[in-house]
Image (cartoon, rainbow, N blue to C red; front, side):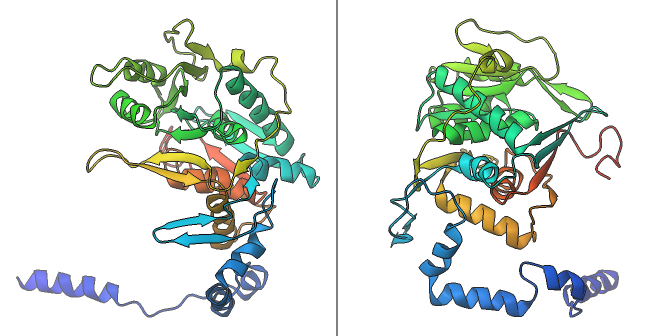
Length: 357
């Protein structure tokens, strides 16, 4: 008992931390929020005029139709910039190209197999997004349709998200480590019309059977007949997989010959951008709907403020896009801010424990 009391005392003492570690003065001088006083000034500005505060920051988004009111608030429902129109894909790509930054690096990707690396400028990423968006439209995917994405952390995952946003389809990213039943649950609940996947993905040197899992989900005996009409398959690992005629199409075949200038749809500010489901570890997965303008402005602003993000930064968020952190700080926040993103495909300990470093 005496030893336990001593241990408890040591833990309690760790909980009492009064030291302060200020950043170097040179860092604070050039930071977006350089001091506690700067933060309090922002806080007071927002508290004094909430709508004016967010109106000034919303000018950074590419508005296709200006909004007339910042916030319509009838608890518990909040509508931001409700009668305005914008597009998340245009905010992440087109506006930077229009500003003369098309040749700037938008994405650096590193695969788990050593030596795999790809880079995309904003113009190149824009072209790939436009071609895939046109491919989705060719399949009949339209505004408001839900498209499930079950992919490894490849550039095509971000391209798929932005392509859905470009045409107004609602993406539902499903973590690539989830089972076929988890896919079936989410497809059924969202009434998904298409699934974007890959033959497989790399994880700790092993090939994950992603397409096989999708096939099992679509044939799940524990769910009603699937609403999914199309499955788009990225050839990633080269592992064999079954392709169902009339339903399945290879990514490279879908985008072949597609135009690289698909126009972004003018989306209502409150139009759904994506659905993201809870893990379901404590019950049935719950789909959380995120709408377009308010979410996008928040992701951009917090990326800039919390991470002191700058246009010349190469920003790496290690989260998977299957989680909200990956949506906000792999894709939408940094790209809307015009920063370059780094994506790593695999696990942090493959092929060795020091891979991240």
